[in-house]
Image (tube, rainbow, N blue to C red; front, side):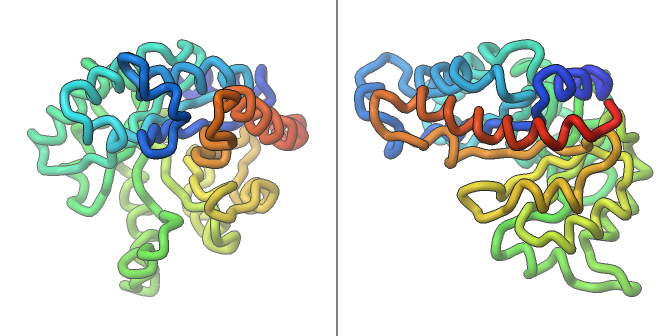
Length: 271
């Protein structure tokens, strides 16, 4: 998916919602456990209920991979089922030396048909560049995350800048805003502003809104650019809005609430 196509979807749906697909067998409604493929059936119902309000879906591959071959097949089916107008993000957080990264890229971009892949930058340019060689595919680089341990390394200073700021400035030379996004956590407004100042034209994938305490309006205030530049992810708040047989209806209602809040912002963007 191109940047122009993504922006068009944001305009059409008046939304920049990304629905995270984290299917946990311990949390999904019990009646689905009786089906042949509970992971897929859960994700399928969530996708059906929420895709009118979402421009992206983000399957977290760990929730599938832990089930072995059956889990990989459920992941493949889930990614194939996501409507083509939506960005398909494989949240796999890969990143290794060059040839290994090349095979990871082939796995998700060619075999699994993902549009985007989350990538860890710790090993540097030669671990990231192989992912950037695929036309109309996106690398979503971890820049500033929302977890408690982010402060262990990401804020360490060198030459007067935090490590995450070095990641942003250095990686901007690797890929353009047409192929590179950044993961930017939603929990500290002032830090979102620091990231936007260093990456004015790039899209951000923003976790942490909803169950993790991030506020949507604050994220937009400090993180948006003229063309939106945001994909705000919500996982648990949507997909586990109900643990009963009405889970898909509850997910739809939560997604609609977020979309309605986003629509007020989209109308002010230059799309």
